Every structure is written in C-alpha cells, then in structure tokens.
Image 1 (cartoon, rainbow, N blue to C red):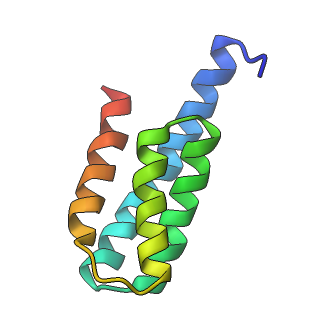
Image 2 (image 1 turned 30 degrees about the vertical axis):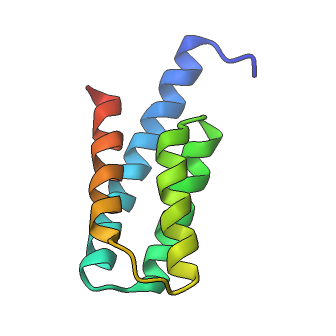
Length: 92
C-alpha cells in the first residue's frame, strides 16, 4: 500500500487504542475462562494486527482464537501475557 508516514502513524494509533481496550477485555475473559469471549476478542486482535502485518501478535491471537473455538484447554493466561507484552512493546 502507498501510505505516507502520517497515515501509518495514524493507523498504528488506532490499532493501539483498540488493542488496549481488547487486551483489557481479554484479561477478564481469560480470568473467568469464558471461551466465547476469548474467541471473539482474540479474533478481533488477530484481524487488526494482521492488517498491519504485526504477525507475532496476529499469530498468538490466532492460536487463542482457534483453541477457544475448539474449546481446547490451554494456558490462556500465558498467551494473554505474551500478547499484552507485544502490544505494549509497540509503544516503547
């Protein structure tokens, strides 16, 4: 895509704002083991991060999305922690 620096900065700001809201919601879903909410929230994070080619974030969210859809028992808190760390590192 032919974006200039201002466009990219604006897109990243929008992504970060949305991702921060979603990561807070994801924490609640993970702590309560609400697989439906984990699925929907991780799906949103996966899509928005993939659109910006933030593939590390997208891949973790995709894993959470897949496992929660299949009702698999994995360590969602570790995945959440990893996602939060990656999202926070974008601002650094």
